[in-house]
Image (cartoon, rainbow, N blue to C red; front, side, top):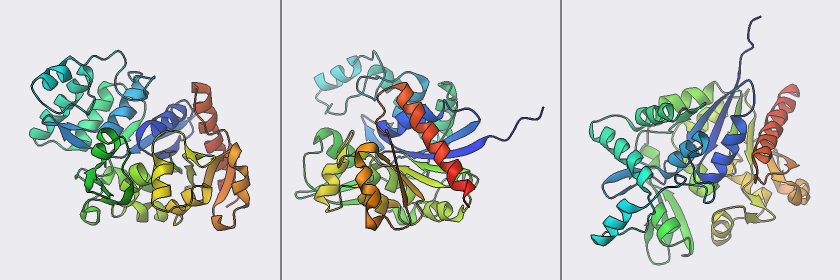
Length: 320
């Protein structure tokens, strides 16, 4: 009997929330998952290229992640970092010994002139991932955050300053001149479903979507439903500073506020049951709000949310 074609799913993701949803999606039968990961928070530490969102995704899907904190490697030690601290280096970016091994490998390959996307693909294979990790670009496009006193890199704001300074503006450095990764364009073009993870829109997803040709390719794929999962529950982020930043930038702390980030192409916004009242929001325009449990505490929660998303996509497609 001939095997049916797998359902092609593209997930835009960054950080812990994206990795949790990816865990659910890889457990759904008959789908081929491609994950386009944020690299706007990539930065150099101790002479090494660190890709936090990409590494969190790889560690999570391979079972190596420190589940308690949601990032880093389980049972990792910090001997290398302690030596660097003794030598007077700044060690506010917490990098474990196993983590250092990955950064050394990536940095060595970059020094040899290899593309970051090829390196990431090889790392994914070494960690036996059952999905494709795709970078949106091979160029550097760092996220910059303007506070009252200065411009900060993402990691300076997020890790060193612990998200405390008030955010006035966010920029994705030189993004208008960034060339997209052809593999990302191909994956988006051929997708049967495009999903935006419950990641921070401003810090994790817009640094991908605003790369030239990425958004137009999403718009160009008219057959694939575009479904986003809100990172907010009751006006608060499950994890991270999304609600704090949105408030400081005077963006509505509700489902309508989230949907506006993706208003040019979004079909469905999945929101938590607690936010059911938002379904009546007149500002949602052409976006359909649907409710379910979006809080992913257990593996079952992750799989159930993934199944819900796939089902919503099939319902949407049946109505076209």
